[in-house]
Length: 211
Image 1: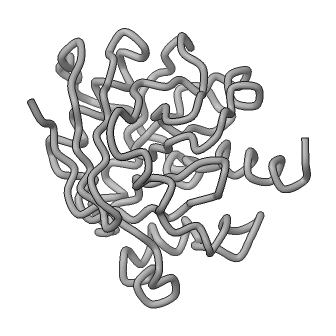
Image 2 (image 1 turned 90 degrees about the vertical axis):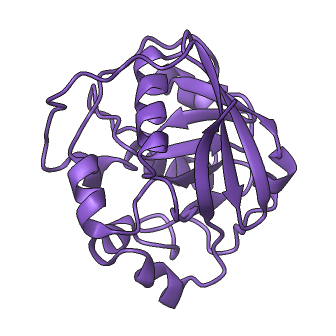
């Protein structure tokens, strides 16, 4: 594995570390999502439609359904966009909202589907049951590196993958692997941090469950 890919992999593992550092458990039960549902991300590069399969990852599908319906992903930036690897979002631009939800973790689902191009996956740490709000789309076939670590796809892009590939990747990864956006600073300062220091980043205008 190349040094660059190793750093990128470590960053995915650490993606939710800041979110779960304070711990926290969900105090209410999630309502089950439909067996299948679609989410349209209206982004600055065009629409992206995700088909969620609840049987792939039931808790992941339920949590994504909940977060989408409450508007959590509206205005979220693609703060990690690494060519041929992943594009990631899920830190809310309002620090208070982000803090409240990032302290809620969900249990792991047994892996059923590989991390192929276009699959949609919750980020997590090396700790069990550490998924929170951050999500990524695989830009390459990451099955060899991510499947053994328990990353569990819950959906797939069925429309607009060309728009996903066009998301801005010029800033690279964030600290400590690169000089791109800092997840810690984004969580503390919200979207103004990205708007000031990383103005070329793309973002989600709205995320909605569609028929």
